Image (cartoon, rainbow over all chains, first blue to last red; front, side, top):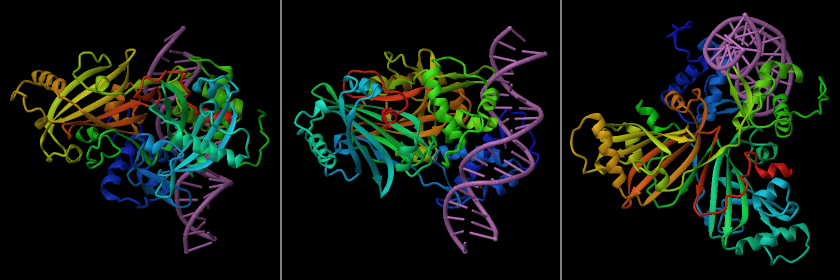
Length: 257
Length: 257
DNA sequence: AAGTGGTCTAGACCACGTA
DNA sequence: ACGTGGTCTAGACCACTTA
């Protein structure tokens, strides 16, 4: 790259071109965990302002190719881990066999308007909320709020101390027979609370998965899970398909063009 | 908001605070399709540089709450549309009953290394690739490249003209009995080609869904779909659960805190 | 203390859409 | 012609990490 750069008359922004150049460098000249030259040097090397270079790095970070650590530098990211979000066995709380999730707390409160609408209960109706964190190799990759109308757990013994109630709710959930679930996935950003649990700064991109659990044809629970978008790839495995070499973050089709 | 703003001694960045303020304004004082004051005025009103204001708007755009149109302004976005990605009926190409997808082209080429690995075929083996665009209400929301090893379509009559071959491949796909699929979803950015098809600038965030199709226990096709993250919410409906009032882009749990 | 990425500024020019 | 968002610059200071 010459300093001036012979303009090809394309309206392609500098930061996008930079991203392409850096992406190729990442794929060919660097390996996972390696540290890139610092931003000021990269900017100087490419003859752009630091802000422009950062715009390119932002893109690559969004794609999960880079990790930036304050005080350290910019590193080549490891490929995203596939996180199975299969069926009850994986996702339902209370199951002792699920080592994936760790319960943070469990509260009961009147449903706010939006939550009541989503659950199909009256506004202000009591709803249990279980907050959990999903761990992969000891690192938090997701947070979840699972909302269950108190009416769906009829056998819960009246009032109790906080910790006792939490245990009771979890036990009840364990016995609940879930016979259907409907999920949706969309892009979001981590608010302060989730960000802290995920050990990421606020505003970090997350994949928001909303799961409706049904029992006997009725909606009995609603889970809102936020997965770190930088490190997670949600996998919906239905059949025991051979997990062949995973397709990288970049669509394979892109390589052909 | 005073012009100076009494610093609460929090290390919260300005742009994040701005996002919070703007988010509340969006929820309470604006309605869908309405145009916000322009960036220069907003920046002046909040007493920040335009770049800082833009950082806040970037966040809100990533969350799907704003749409920015060059030459027009910044608009309040409509809620994301739920895009069903259910089963063969929805996703498999060639089916005439699927009005959702429009075939762009169909080519046959030797498999590149990464594609060959993903498909479990030898590098250079011929692979058919069907490119499609998914339309919702006339607007493109997703592109897809569906790769099928030529060996999986044994009844394809030898050499043909381009257009004839495309039709043949599609017909063969229609007859292929798919008995299983495995999906994954992750965050990505639209490259130039996809971006053009999606009518978005390069670098726009997309949800990349990779689908492995199995027939008779073998991997027979691989689809890489890129959905516009700004307007799409992928829905994995298994049971015919009642579609109650959809939970908004912001997790319902956030409203309670 | 030195080096890193993160934030913020004040300005400039460009590309696009509308009138 | 004008107003909009999109890009880019050259600098400054801050927060964090390591030595």
